[in-house]
Image (cartoon, rainbow, N blue to C red; front, side):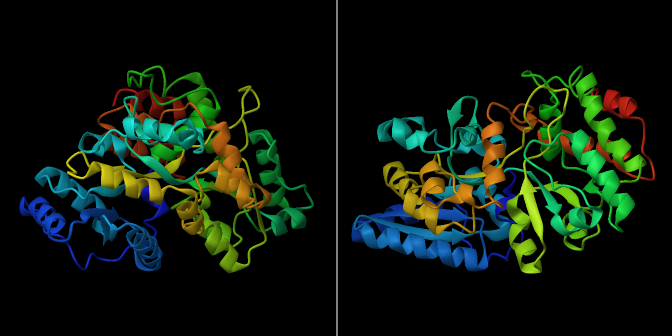
Length: 412
């Protein structure tokens, strides 16, 4: 996942551990002085989120006479610091993690640790999450948070247009019909989507229609330009051409918050701001493609917690990871992250909350899909090229031929 769960706003790092070969030696010396095993824990969170994390770290330290965890808040420099640490052999013992394709070679495989905890430990996490915390069949991170995507809609605009609100059973045909009516009967557009969508996110629409960017070997040809893939891109472009959908500069959140559009698809990141706005909104599953014969699928933006391959104190690090991923900690981070433990979702009655339940419905519907970012080694470079190609399809000043653009993209 993209680290959207935690990077909405970041502070500069104010105190940085020197990333040099001497860092590991200092840890060992500290261990010898007071008998406690020192564990460094790197987070990407900032401000009040870090304060809440520090409270949890303090709680762990108070309960352990033999381990002392130090929280290192890297903020917006997280990736730079982690990369530098891995390069110099001075990676924090435990760290938040999202970009497994880039970092997994510097992480400790956790399969043996998980196995020791018994089947119930792993089974309590939603199954879909493991796929996003693994590489090449090995688990490198324990899930701590996620969001799927859902359809947000403005209840007031639906009432003004005199039409029924969306349901979890909607198809894209239903959405298009409602969007047309809203555009005709109100001053708002019916639907919004990004003019330059992030390819990582957009692949979920292809999955929902039985397609994907690539096959298991990473081949684009015959996949990203397949008939089913073209249908997806053409549907979005046609909605824009027919005037009841608008392609936005960003996610569409700004247009939705202002009441300029009635519907858009997004993650849980916007819920707090929508609540602060007092917007009368609802959330349902992403519509399905009527002819696909399957439920809609969502990409996951997921985060986990990992142990450095270079850590000299892996058992102590795992003890902290277990604490950070247990029920108590999962509950303490509600509001920062959607809970990942089914037992917490049940005890906190998350599924009774209509603004959150659809994210879990989409989670359950999205098992078994592997993002192209986990398959294609040069994904970062390819993603930039695909993003530019998708903009050629959706930018209102171009609206280029879908088959031409996708056939060209298949050769990248």
